[in-house]
Structures are given as structure tokens and as C-alpha cells.
Image (cartoon, rainbow, N blue to C red; front, side, top):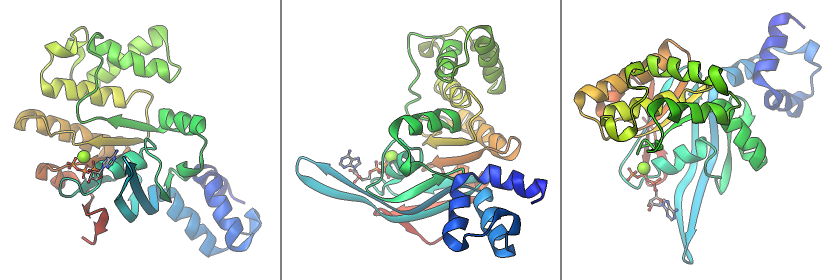
Length: 267
Ligand SMILES: Nc1ncnc2c1ncn2[C@@H]1O[C@H](COP(=O)(O)OP(=O)(O)OP(=O)(O)O)[C@@H](O)[C@H]1O
Ligand SMILES: [Mg+2]
């Protein structure tokens, strides 16, 4: 087996290897050309959702919010999820981020089937690989902009002066180094959103997921945030998944998936 093949197998991880094993049980040193195709497809995909369904149960009522969603997102792409209110966008995003467990189907992120992970392994996976940007910013009001980012770094095991330096670096990346000591209430909506993005980038996750990141922003701040997200994908190679109603983001997207009544529409 060549060094390149070893590298591809390591990046794809155990999931692709088990796909190969189920398919034809080849020895790794005798990979058939079609198996190399399987590996290449797996390694180029950051997100692969298959048959994802979600049934909510509340006060004895069942509601099927997602009905067999299949979605593939390539590494380095900006993927939008759009659709009317109540169509299931936040539900799908939360499942793809490992925050909610689907009642049907499975989700592979970076080759790992997250729907099969134990809750502690899933928490670890999310910490290492996913930066999540919440619609309402979700910043801690009692902490400064810098401390909001340091907290996220601490969770990832980065502490002390290294965390402080890295947090400053992240604030610089979003153009807010001069606001490090401000508390969220002293920041504009756009600045809060940029701190939230900087926090989502703590620890260098490969996947960035955002729920309506520009919804609360005026045109100027909205553009700044869109440019940041575009830069993350196109300059830094991150995979960016965005739930949005904002038509301005369509211009920078590689793909747009439309959800309606819990189902993806062909686009
Ligand atoms: N915890 C829950 N229990 C019961 N039903 C829920 C729950 N969460 C969401 N739903 C329902 O599932 C459907 C999809 O909700 P979801 O929040 O995913 O929609 P959305 O597309 O994000 O909408 P919006 O654009 O308004 O944010 C809605 O009909 C909603 O009422
Ligand atoms: Mg929503």
C-alpha cells in the first residue's frame, strides 16, 4: 500500500474501512479501483446524512418534523439550509450537529457515524470538530468578549496564557481585538455575532454550523458576517452549514437545500 493510500485510510477513519469490509472484504494492500472510489467519496464528504427522520413527542402528541432526509456536504463547501418557518431547518441542523438524536437514519461527520457514538464520545467529538453559532449569540453576559472565547478554549483543554493568546488571535480574526474587554451589553448586534463566531472557531473545528447568523443584523454587519463565513470556507477550508432566510448568503453558497414540511426538495 502506498503512503497516499495509508493517508487516505487514516483520514477516512474506521467507517470507510468498515464500508469496504462489508462490501467485499478486500485486503487493504489489494484495494480494487472501485474501492478507492468509495474512499475518495468518503474523504471528500464532511457531512453525509441518510434517511434522517425526527418525531417529536410532547404531551401525548406525535409530530414528524423530518421525513427521511438525505444530505451530502463536501469538505470546504458552504451549504445553506432554507425553507419556510416550521419546515424543520433547526431540527435538521441540531441533528447534524449532534445536539439532537434523530429517531431514524444516521449522520456521518468527517467519516464518523455520530448516531452510533456514546453520549460522552459524542460530546468529545463535538468539542473537537464542531463550532456552533446560535441565533441568539448565547454569550455569557458577565464575561468580557475575550473571556467568552477563553471559556470555550478551556472546555477544549486549552488554558492559561496560551488560551488568552489564542482568544486574542480569534478576536483579531473577526476584527474585534479592540473590544476584548467589553461585555456583551456594550457591543452592537454585529459585534456580538462576531464574538460568537470567534468562540465557535476556538480549537480550530473543521465544521462550522450556524443558525440564522445574519437574522438580527443590519446590512453592514450582515455583510461582514457573510464575508467571515465565506472566508472560513474558501480560505481556511472549513465546511460551513448555515440555516438562513437571508437571500444575501445565497451568493456565497456552493449549495442550497430547501426543506419543506420535513422533506428536502430537489433544487
Ligand atoms: N421540541 C419540540 N416538540 C414538539 N415539536 C417541535 C419541537 N421542536 C420543534 N417542533 C416542531 O417541529 C417543526 C420544525 O421545527 P423547526 O424549529 O425545526 O423549524 P424551522 O424550519 O427551524 O422554523 P423557523 O424558520 O421558524 O425557525 C415545527 O412544526 C415545530 O413546531
Ligand atoms: Mg429555526
